[in-house]
Structures are given as structure tokens and as C-alpha cells.
Length: 98
Image (cartoon, rainbow, N blue to C red):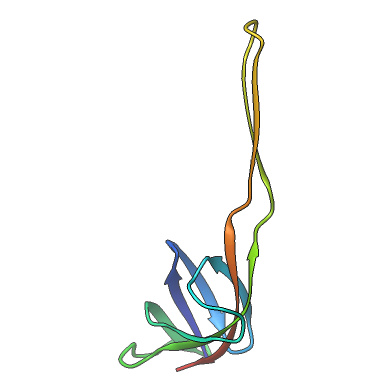
């Protein structure tokens, strides 16, 4: 069975056993969480009823994403700024859907 869940302003298609990286969630490695905002659930190409469907997940780790470089420049004014940013992420393992 699969489900589409919304967390951190993004949507993810998940099934039991999947690993996903989402925006930072509260908790430590090993904690169990429930993703309650289920948008769609289905099995074998059929859409299931959403009543009572929840997605259980386990936090694998708290990590940072790839570095994004921000570079600003104004030509002929000797103005250059370089900045890097790494977004906080949470790695999840989907335990069950349903």
C-alpha cells in the first residue's frame, strides 16, 4: 500500500520500508512519529478510503542537506558576497501505511 503525505510544505509518495528526507521535524534518532496529513492512499492502482489512514515512521537521523551557494555581484563596483547555506533535514524510515 502507498500513500501521499504532506510535511514541511512538500508532498511525498511513500510505502512501507521507504526512506525519505524531509524538512526538520522535532525528535531524536529512534523516535517514532505519525504523519497524519495523508492526501491519498491506494493499493494496486486503486484509491483507498482516507478515513483512519495514518503513516507511521521512525526517525533515522537529523542531518543537513547539500550546501547551496549564494553569490551576489554588482559589476564595476567591486561588490561580491559569497554565502553558503545547509538546510536542516530529518531522515525518516516509513514503518507502516494504513
